[in-house]
Structures are given as structure tokens and as C-alpha cells.
Image 1 (cartoon, rainbow, N blue to C red):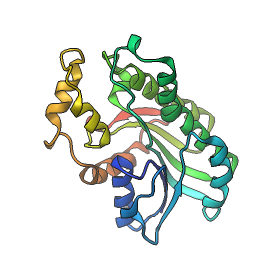
Image 2: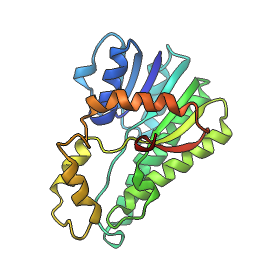
Image 3: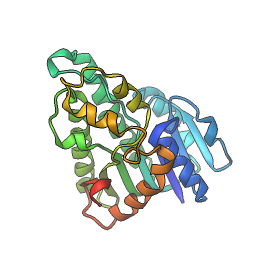
Length: 234
């Protein structure tokens, strides 16, 4: 099995890569930092900021030269951005969140298809926030809603590949460190609920969540191409 995952240095991407490696898969990981805990014979790593498109164009051909087919591509790399009211977020900060969460995924997909890499399944890691307008989550919600539509459009244009925008539920990643530090819980209604979930079974670690997520990915293949799926509703 050949798997490509972005954002493997930590969090969900790292947990998924580790689980796939346990299952005997060959994993190609892309992230800005090398994940030392994954460096085994079946793991291949490219240290790259996917928003650096010029560098990506130079490095991706040699990195992926040995593989022509991926069973699954997991577009996991993403950022939360600041939890602030929309009027408080500079436009440049909004653009950066969109760059990472949406356009870098378009860049990678376009490169893969142009390089004639066949792909059975693409998972864009989304969020329940993509469906709700909640005070403070504007940049993140907009970007994940954009990712949902990106997956849906590609599903229609690249119908040989199955696409899903996949919300993994609450997982204890570095994003939670930022959420944990927020004190203005009255201003941002959902923050208290997320903070209370940390260190409970409601918010597993990436290593614990990975097998459940992979089971969800497999189920997605039986659903409509281009769908948004929340693992909590499967």
C-alpha cells in the first residue's frame, strides 16, 4: 500500500503515518520538519513548506519518482490561525490561513495529476467548523469550507479518484495547545467545550485516533464522491 500524507511532523499526520507503517504500508510524508519517530525503511520524507510552490516544483519530481500510484493521499497539513473576531484579524493573516489550508492542497493535487500519478482516494482533513459560523473561528471556518468545496470540485473533474472532505473530530494536537491557552471563553462560546474535552476520552491522542480515522477513510469509499464526512456521524 502506498500512502502520501502532508503534515507528518506531529499531530494527526504523524499518528496516521505511524499507524500505516505498523500495517506494512509505504508512506511518503511531507512536512516542514523531519519526524524522527517515523524514520524507518518504509518511510520517505520530504522537508518542504507546501506554500513554497517554486521549491515544491523542484523537489517533488525526485521525491516521488519511484512511485506511480497512491492508494490514498491525505491532505492533513493545516493551521488554525488566530481565534479572534473577524474585524480583529488582518487581511494578510486571513490570506495565510487560506494559503496553507486550501491553496497548498490545490498545488499538490495539480502537481500529482500533471505528473500522471494515479490516486485511488484523496482525503482533505476538514473540520466541523467548516459548516458553522462561530465567533472567533472566522479564518479557520472559511478555509475549511473552501477545502470542502475544493474536494467536491476535484471529485467532479477527476472522477477516477475518490475525494472526501473528512472531519476527524476532536484530537489532541498542537492546535489544542493554543486553544487551551485562550482565557476569553465568554467571548468565544465553543472554546470552553473544547478545553473541557482535553485529557478525556472525547479528545484522543493522534496515536489512539489513527486506527479509528483509517477505518473511517475506508468507509468513505462507499459514499458519494466529493462528500463532506464527520467521523462522529459515521
